[in-house]
Amino acid sequence: MYAVLRSGGRQFRVEEGRTIRVPKIDAEEGARLELPEVLLLARDGEVTVGTPLVEGARVIAEVAAQGRDKKITVFKYKSKVRYRRKRGHRQAYTELRIERILAPGEPEAAEEAPRRGRRKAPAEAAPEAAAAEAPAAEAQADAPEAEAKPRARRSRAATPEADAPAAEERPKRARSRKSESTAPEEGEA
Image (cartoon, rainbow, N blue to C red):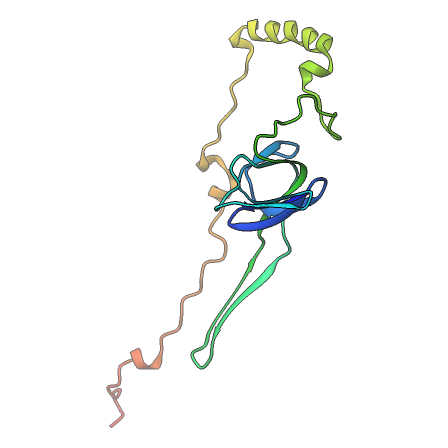
């Protein structure tokens, strides 16, 4: 079973269990996403083509990583006019691990197998530890405000950089000959 989905203006052929790189999606690593833009769905030799989307079909994926691609060089050049521009670019991407491809009307599984690498929330991990931390937080909140020390602010004038003279001032340029007077001096004629 495979599907063709659209993400970030591009099309990707996906299969369950595979990992793909799509243009950056704002999501944290480990988050589950539902991608509803399925353009084509193939299952057991039966192919369903959307117009433009397959209604009700969706792909469930987990964000495996966020990253940036290799740097490419963008060089613009026009001959005979001394025009050259050189820039670098690194495209941001999101790496997705495809978990399920769901056909129209197919419900997502009620019970899921535990996902690898999933971190438990602090309350799930140790309810006793969370309960022990709660009284400590309340005691800290009840502490008088007079004990809290305000952060000292330093004005810009008090910093040593402000007192130091400007680093290496530019030397004055010598006058050019054109700016000097062209009238002959006394004694010359």
